[in-house]
Length: 141
Image 1 (cartoon, rainbow, N blue to C red):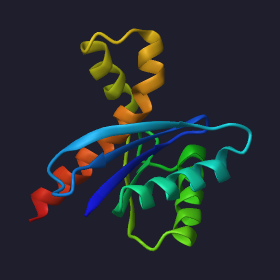
Image 2 (cartoon, one colour):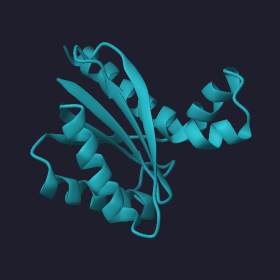
Image 3 (tube, rainbow, N blue to C red):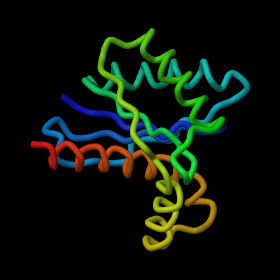
């Protein structure tokens, strides 16, 4: 069973996925949103879940630095609620603080220019969210 990670944003959603054994994580794609943003994101995520035979979905929850929920976290909570209406797999939210910054740093280290970083940072952030989740699971075993 594959696990998919999501870094949802108002303009783009980063997507990452594990291998079937859940040993490795890789960035998959960045979904760009047009005017239909929210509904388009839900349809695209559901399609990817089906296409890749995903059994669990991990969604980054953008908490404020003090751990409280702001507007961005409420948008993600609404996304999760809508996804739960469309998917019959477990959906888990985890704290995603600083993953976008960390993703940008990884891309810089790989020599990505500003445009490349902007195009791919969301999917790398999703990979970090998913890896954090897997790391937490392995500590619990």
